[in-house]
Length: 140
Image (cartoon, rainbow, N blue to C red; front, side):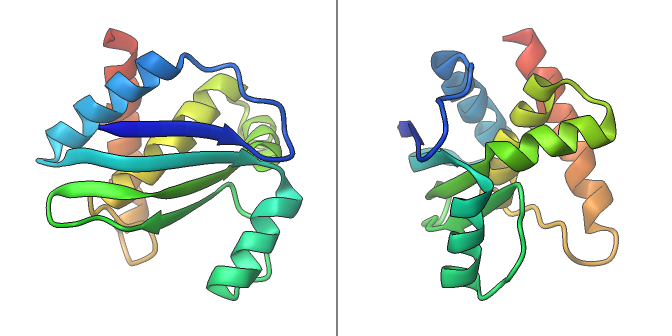
């Protein structure tokens, strides 16, 4: 298992990388997945907009972009997270920044595990999976 965390144009967030890695492994296992190479890139809004335009032809800001390179039951991929958008979302929703960051970190993993959030009813399934995963983090 190799999970790496990088920062691009932002300060590295205050996270416990070892605990987060263990958490990701536990959540992936709960979906019958094995963790392979995963790169988290923490960035700002300008960078995520650039990535969104260049690779997805989307012209808007977002909190996360997950590039899925999974093979069978091994999850792999690159996950871009805009810390700017995470901060503004946490303010809008009245949640703690750290909790919102954790939610977004695991959101990408849940996508790699096969959970979607764009179709009818899928957003509720994703939110339930995020909440379950956040509860798991508190037990580690």
